[in-house]
Image (tube, rainbow, N blue to C red; front, side):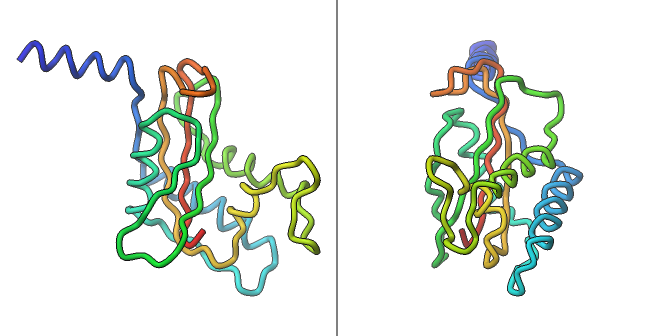
Length: 166
């Protein structure tokens, strides 16, 4: 029994602790996504709903503590799943999902709606994922990683949101 306890503790210390969102965090992440989406003015914009299966996939991905996109597959689905990632070198006591989503949304300034492209050498894919009109489902999770893989962060925050269809 002592060996199992030590092994569990060692894995916890060396790895990262992913956390499922609380009901308040789910409400927060849905509220900010839907508010920002609504303000874009698209006539076919869908209201996002929480998807537990997408959240489970986000949770599994965040546990890996490697800052790179995954390709979550969903059984019995005929659509692509989009994914946004966020990392911070300092893990806060509580995650402010509104700030994370607004950070992604800030890429709007890099997006040209008339050509539907990003400005040269700029990033806008997180923004377009947040406001993709046909997206209906959202699932997010986060982890506090003792070592956040390829970013070399210690005690870093890693947030993953999955979108369907993406």
